Picture 1 (cartoon, helix red, strand yellow):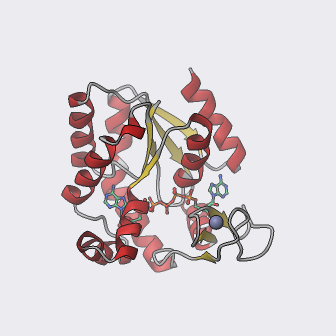
Picture 2 (tube, rainbow, N blue to C red):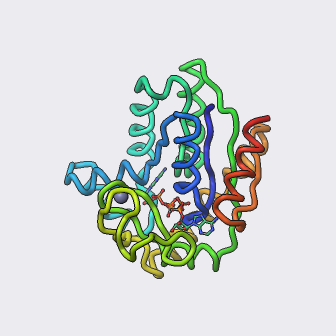
Picture 3 (spheres, helix red, strand yellow):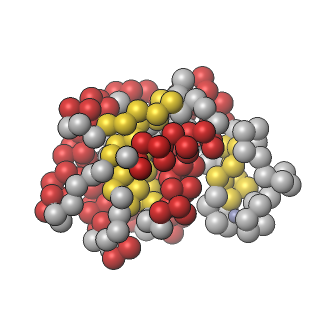
Length: 214
Ligand code: AP5
Ligand code: ZN
């Protein structure tokens, strides 16, 4: 299965992608995770990306397109993949389309998650991520059994640098201006599937499974 999860910051793309990955045995390709790993490793790309990420702006298209192009060539993508956070601009979507057709592949679906703005802010301010295994939690909607400790690996839960309210507002603005046009872009290609992302995590998962199984 070759899937894109599309939606604003905090819509639940990462949460749903991780669950789909386990279910279908295909990789999650999160450009946000790849960029954060580059920042943590202090690579040249990471240093460049950090200045954009810290203010909630998009990293230049050529950087992220290069990342995804390389990642799609890896053997674990042969059976399929879940793109989470890419594409985010029309040039990124065009580049992906060209890359996939050159590989003789096509998208099965683009799942668009819809969530109200205030709910997005609530989700992002309450999000915590495991510093050990990367698993996501929410202090209210998906809390760990022991406060600030990962249920899976026992690692410490931390807050993302860009999950401060001011940066969140800018990320949402950037989404509206640069990424939301992709909803019509993929609707026009006949692959868009819309899901109400306001429901609980398990319900959203069932909705997605219902759509991608057909
Ligand atoms: P990225 O890491 O992609 O962040 P994002 O798109 O802003 O998305 P998030 O990870 O914040 O949200 P999500 O939808 O995955 O929500 P989650 O499942 O965690 O990008 C970060 C930055 O990197 C960008 O700002 C940019 O600078 C750069 N970048 C990345 N990709 C790029 C690209 N292609 N081009 C250019 N720049 C790029 O859920 C959020 C919280 O809500 C969690 O706590 C979760 O537990 C909770 N939750 C989830 N679902 C539900 C639910 N149904 N009900 C209640 N709570 C829920
Ligand atoms: Zn963990």
